[in-house]
Length: 100
Image 1 (cartoon, one colour):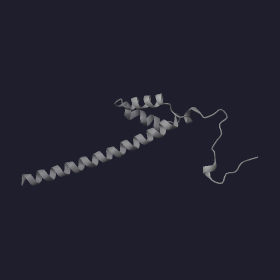
Image 2 (cartoon, helix red, strand yellow; image 1 turned 180 degrees about the vertical axis):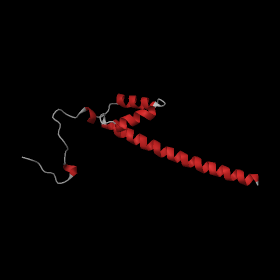
Image 3 (cartoon, helix red, strand yellow; image 1 turned 90 degrees about the vertical axis):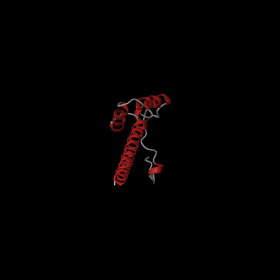
Image 4 (tube, one colour; image 1 turned 120 degrees about the vertical axis):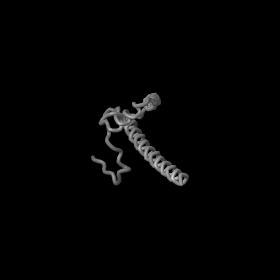
């Protein structure tokens, strides 16, 4: 007998015969600590989030964290660039006013 569900919220999702796969397991504290230490290493912290975010395999928790990390980095880079442009413009106008 097949069950039917009226909404996606009631759908329990695919049932795995042997439990969740490695990709779907919750990351342990040790795995998160290793992830955060890797993100503290210069240059590596630019490459590994790209690898984790866009690889076809790997843990889903780390994949979505990496995507959020990259979005956050792009957003802050944009804020810093805009602030630098505004500050440079202000300084240039102040120098122009003072030189007159």
